[in-house]
Length: 97
Image (cartoon, rainbow, N blue to C red):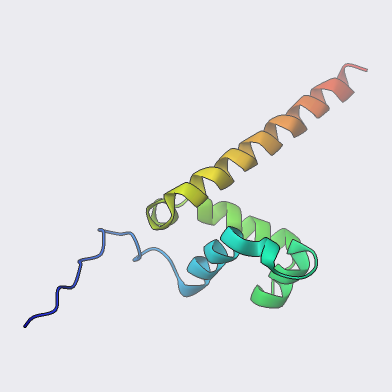
């Protein structure tokens, strides 16, 4: 009997490092870690909060991450867009005062 092995989706995993997959897994369930998200990211990945978010933003823009976990990546992209719109609106309000 030959075991059936599914072929990976073209490019789905090829573009993701182990760390990329670990970051996506962390984003799926970071609230399970004690303390602040930034502290957990520092402990798990050895990254400052600023660097973690830089890496995460680059990661969620990648097609490989979208293929790996489309629901999570789309949710993270929506959250980022919402935050960016909020910052832009505050900047405009400050400029008009």
